[in-house]
Amino acid sequence: MNNKQRAKIQLNCHSEEVKRLRNLKDSSTQASLSVGMTQYKVFIIFVGCILLFASICHAKVKVAIIATVYDDIITTIDLDNAMAEAKKTVPEFSEKNKEQLLDQLIQEKLLARKANELNVDVTPADIEYAISSYKTKSGIGTLDDASLDDLLKKQGGSLIEFKQNVRRQLMQYKIAQIVVRPRIVITEEDMRQYYTTHYQNEEYVSFHAIRIPLTRYDRCLSIEKNIHADDFKDAEKFEKMKISDLSTSFQSAIQRLKKGEVSRCIEMNNGYYILMIDDFTEGSGKSFDAVKNEIQTDMTNQKMESEFAVWMKELREKASVKIKKELL
Image 1 (cartoon, rainbow, N blue to C red):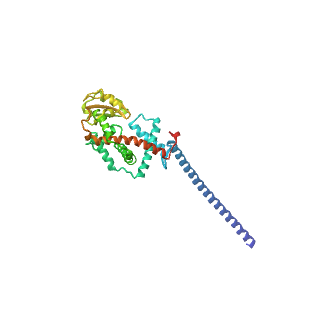
Image 2: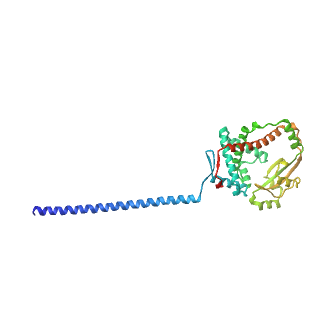
Image 3: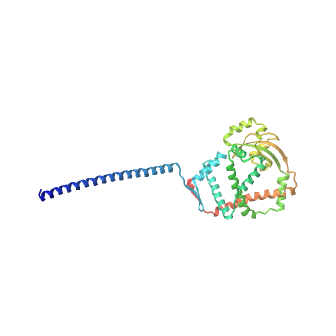
């Protein structure tokens, strides 16, 4: 074999090797492209699922800021939750009451801000003391928390909600003691006039009351038709209430009753009531000196309530509050 033949054979072998390598490279490139396209498709599907899930969630729950109180916010969810809580005790609450509830939420935000500014706090001990006082005055002082919770649930509430309401009231009271109480002046003459009007010439009534949720009028009628003394065993007790201080519905019912008699169903904003009269008394039978401190407390509380309303209005007018009324 001469040199030319040998060179030709080597050249052919080299060409075959180059062709084989090119084929191998093309196969590797195609495989890489295939894997890349698969991963890309998986990524696109994954992103699509996320966007679809987000759109579904957005369609189900639409949250918007309905009001701002300084740097704090109130959302549509907050308002909806407040509406749900209100309907537990007042089923008639509807969309037309939303503005009223929003005003209440705004007031709570303003009071919380003012409480923080004044370093006012309501402790668990404060709440427990207030509840204990309430139970004693209502004649249910022996009830433990579980029994009180059961009683409140029968009336459409719960112990948790009751404690939340007590906390709000105590917070308001403590703030009022700081910002409103100094404005109030009560003279001896004011107290004597109050004594004449409210202690010497007033008629008092003591009674037990059963409360039935507004959604259970049928139960109210059933109790009314088959009432007996045992039904009032766990009912709330009210001692020596001034008749003139009661609601007109209560006054109208009480005026038709005698001691030991039971009323028909009385419709109120927060439920139906059935009353059993325990006793009637005329005048307190106490001297001015004996009730002077009590009178001062009553008059102070009444004036604080009216002054607090004025102060709250002033606070609201000065506050940075923005409302999106189109969301109501």
